[in-house]
Image (cartoon, rainbow, N blue to C red):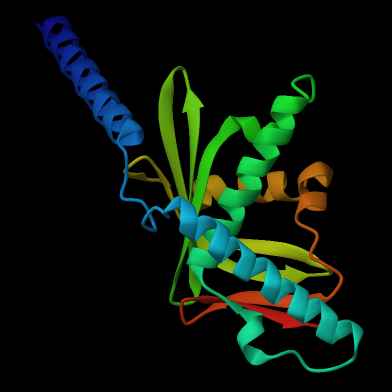
Amino acid sequence: MADSTGKKIYEIARWVVLVALIVVIIFALKKPQPPAPPLAPAAVKEQAQQFETKLRQIETAQQQGAPPDPESTTFTSTEVNAFVQDASERAKEEAAKQPTVADAQDEIKSTQVAFIGNEVVAQAVTERYGQDVYITVRGRLGAENGYLRFYPTGFKVGDLSVPVGMVNPTLQKKLNDPDTREKLKLPAFVQDLRIENGQLVVVPK
């Protein structure tokens, strides 16, 4: 009788775990709400140009020893998204000309950010086993010794929230990897940056 009861409990537990796994997979593969609306092709070029113009203004002011125009030191998420999208499209065009050159960015199909309060929400789409997987991270930006730093406060796979404590050690290890760290090196004329009141604020040297 005890053996029969134990077997029954095991069967129930096994099915509960199976159902839970199915639910996790469904939420992990579910397409979440994008952090920002898509940009029209015409807006991408215009906003990307605006982004680059502001950066040049900061660099020029720093080289001349003059304070930059305060308006040139703040960037909207629209400007950043446009610049990233435009740069990504140009990189793909270059890669198409040199198909033998491996590009780690091939793993990421698209990236989008939004600035909310004093935090950035970034969403990347990658493909695994023929399925689009959406990774969304939320956190604060900063700078340390000339490199960009990211301090996560939220993490999601699809529509499934994952405790930051489970992800952060691996994330920080990846960010501190020499190859990755070099990509996070800030321009020489940038001392610090942060998200403030829904905008990216660049502090020149």
